[in-house]
Image (cartoon, rainbow, N blue to C red; front, top):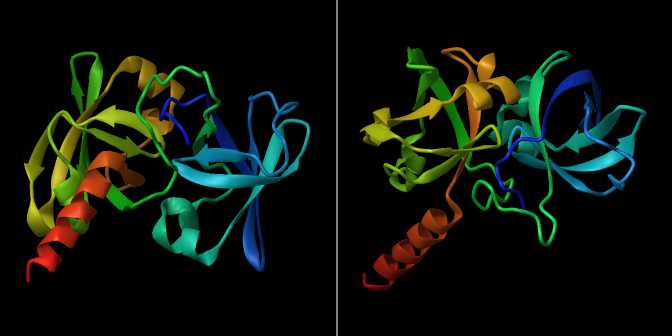
Length: 204
């Protein structure tokens, strides 16, 4: 479990393909107490630490993860938002995030708005029902508030504002129109949707 509050922006140092894909990710996070088998959210994807180096750790990505997230396009030099798993007693600064990516979106536009940047994100129609104004969403592991829903259906899109702090301490400072982002919808919205679907199916 995570909160969507990014602790470091790591960098992919190496990509190895032998069976599952193995990534080496450089980080400034203290690794002394990061145990093998621990979970780290990498651009919102919950991944398991399989090996550690002096200032880097290694994770493995299955074909399922590569096919359902943006990780299939990560290369040497890719910037990755990192968050260690939540510990009992930690402050919940964002919202509850599982690290289970529901789908990927595409940045449609990036526009200055005051000191902030306004991003418009195109979202798969299958996820649009979970996107609501002032609701929570996780983009590349970052807990954000949805400003507005601009379109629905097959052309679904929504807007978020990235304040200077978030731009500085996450990969949003480098993201541009056309880039993909991992989307995790709000957990409560996801399960409420499943419950409603089950009730509807039972009434048929």
